[in-house]
Amino acid sequence: MDQSVIITGAGRGLGFSLVKQHIERGDRVYGYELDIPDTLTEYAEKHEKLHIYQCDVAKTESVVNATAEMLACEEKIDFLYNNAGIFRFEDRCSLLDTDIDASVIMIQVNAVGLLRMCKAVLPKLGKGSMVVNITSESGSIGDNYREVEYMYGMSKAAANMASMIFQKEVEKYGTRVICFHPGWLRSPMSGQYAVDSPYSVSTDESAANIVGYAVHPERIPEGVYFMEHTGKPLPW
Image (cartoon, rainbow, N blue to C red):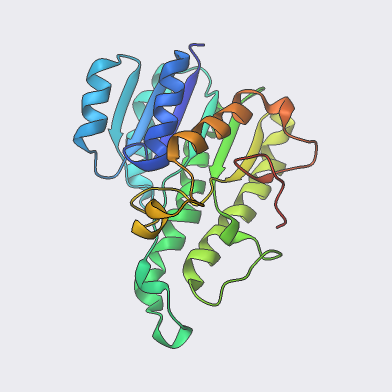
């Protein structure tokens, strides 16, 4: 399709699967990653439409530097996938045992990092642009069942709120913002238990579903801004 696509956290898991989905569509893909793995570099060597950049979404200067070349080359951004995120297994514990100072970085990455990217590319968003924010069902207050993982849930709830405020700002330009829970992914971030579970989902399957909605936003019911990769709406 030869559309412009930005994907953060592009080197692994769901991000890499999103990269492959859009490269197979023939799009121009800008992949951002904190630590660029060899697999992403090797994939880029085989696909001239994939451009990769080192980027730490927790730092404004890094985001500005990483997006500078893309902003100079593109008249419009068709798709922005805010996928970069972190999780701490150590936070699967009671509040008494939670290291709040150590885990607060998740808010910087998972929520504020999303805003840094949106701010950086805002001048290039316009009619038909899609901002796809990979949040999580753990950010749903209405569906919460957890007794642990305070900071992760807080970071995803904050990401959802940021997404809705941003939607209100950009809808007048014809830009749409949607939050996706990608499922319980079989990826390093989810751990071995998810990899072994029959209830988890592959990153390729999740990415295919998410891209399917992103490129066909008419499939998303009116008034729905937070949903599973399968299309099921989620409560805030």
